[in-house]
Structures are given as structure tokens and as C-alpha cells.
Length: 155
Image 1 (cartoon, rainbow, N blue to C red):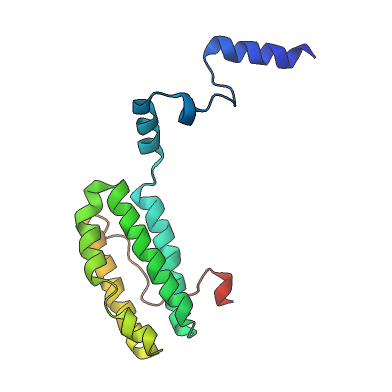
Image 2 (image 1 turned 180 degrees about the vertical axis):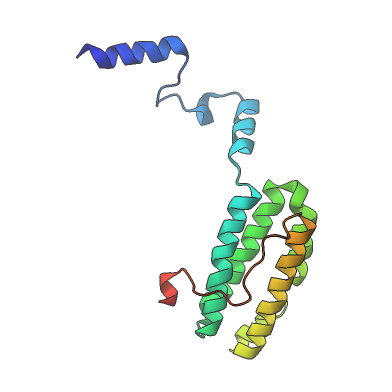
């Protein structure tokens, strides 16, 4: 029974924080800010989520699941807004993207028009490629027609 006590004593002596030492409550304000900045999602994390939304958006439109398509656009816009906050270096290109990438979707979804939706999707994809190029990521090329969605809503 002595081992847990030895581990606790070693942790105390070495400066390792125990589970009840919550930096969010006990750290000085500048350390809290430093920690929060450190754990903010990077562009690559947010773009992985965008990729999932991209695939789901395409297939939602293809399957005529218009409410789900609109939801994917809302989530993509939120991700871009998050990117502008968490990665200020990317803010200008993200803002330019957000202003023009989604313009064709409202009418397509309102009219439940696949042809119009497909054109809006192509336009958005083109804007994605422009943004990737502006950020030295031209090697990231999105498929014009994703092979499948990843949400069970699309099954």
C-alpha cells in the first residue's frame, strides 16, 4: 500500500501537478492566456473539419437533403470565422473566401435545384483552391465530386 503514497510524494517534490491542480482556476492570468493560445486549433485542424463538411455538403445536395446542405454551409462559415480568430495570419484570405464562396447556395437550396447547387459547389471549390494557393497550399486539391459523404445522415 506504500506505492501510491510514494508516487504522490514524488509528484509533489518534482513539481508535477496533481489532478486537483487546475491551471484554469489557479494560474495567473498571463499563464491562462498563454495556455489558451497554445491549445487553439490550427488551420490544419479546422481544414480537416472543413473537408468533412465539404464532402457532406456535396452529397446532401446530390441526395436532395436541402436542410442538411444548408446546415453544412452554416458550419463551414463558422469554421472560417473560427480560423480568422485563431489564426490571424490567415484572416485576410479567409475573409475574402467567406465573402464570395457561398453566394450561389441560398437560391439553389431555396429552389431545391441540383443544377444550380452543383454550379454553386463548383464556384465554392474554385474559391477553396484560390485560398489554398494564397496560403502556399496549392498542393491541396479538393475533388470536384467527392466520392462519398461521411455523415450517417447521408446513408
